[in-house]
Length: 527
Image (cartoon, rainbow, N blue to C red; front, top):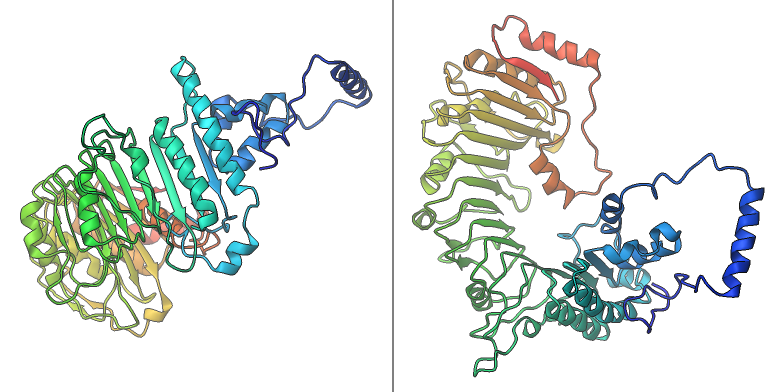
């Protein structure tokens, strides 16, 4: 970030030029500048970026690390103080690869960290610690300039831990409401996130009596210990934990201290198999440890309305359904470890319906197993109105078997599909389902994502048009489903192959195949 200033504390790094504009040198510079302007021809390439409104420029700067964002003050007078209006600052000890995401930050190889380390990371955090107080004082005086978010990515080394903790303490003291801390290294880190700055003494016997104003906390690959009676996170509404080194007891103490918690993300948490919270409304639980005998996953959250789960084995224990009376949206993905695909059949639908009896919106993500033979699928989802299917299958699959989900949900109004074809599944037996003599009178909307115009996709769409007389609209889109895009953005590099785009001529070909001999009043849309 260049040499950091000492006076004043809130100034940007000293490599950014801020000379006095009133001295004799400034007059010489202006004369030289004016003479140069008179000699140079008018530019044919005006600076359109600098002409954008502050709101747009600030949105661009917030996506940059703090070093780059502050360095833009050297570009021109227009940019000189723009960085000072940022509400979010991000500091990184390591230059992150192009395909990185917050979920995928750790671990990284030691050689990569050593070769891509920023030299001025610690001085930058010291500058932040001094600057945040001045920003907070300015906001208290009526200038809405207080920081709201601090993001730190570092290697977890003891050399940097002191500066990181000081920055976190300054953020806690001056009301920063959103804090992200991620540790990137290929071994377990000894770094522990400091909880003490978020709990101040009220002058009584309990040093943990007061709470901070922290609203969102995201921690990745570090330690966290909560003392008994801790209340520093009582205002927290969103908590994200990724690959944290915590015991089940630490997790329960943490959740007990988050009285206002509404949203919880647990990603790759090895030691956590059960959680309990009375006010939790949204739970995202990805990649928990595989269930073992007598040690199954448990959730007790009576206010839970939205659940996203991705794991191997049993979805959730049957006893869970009694503690989830408000659950309406469920997203489930079964992970297969190794190369063996399990035998599976429509009994899985009965299990899901029994465990989530109140679900209105269901998203199923899974790879097509060896064999699914179930001609007589029972109508078991009595409240399901929205169904999303994200399927991985072999290229030769006819897709007609997906209609069994319609039979299982007689009141379904909206169906979304996102099919991905994997050639290595071609050796599998796939799905056999031959109960095509059904009629679905509730289906109104169908959206098929990742659509490639294949005959098997058109055949499935024709079946829906024939068997759903009340359908009003069927839409096709080459891109992935938004939820699938968000998920794969965290896992796959940006150059991952995408679906081809269709030309209008291709659309006409699809339309002719789709409606040939089919009588339907549904509107066909290419998104």
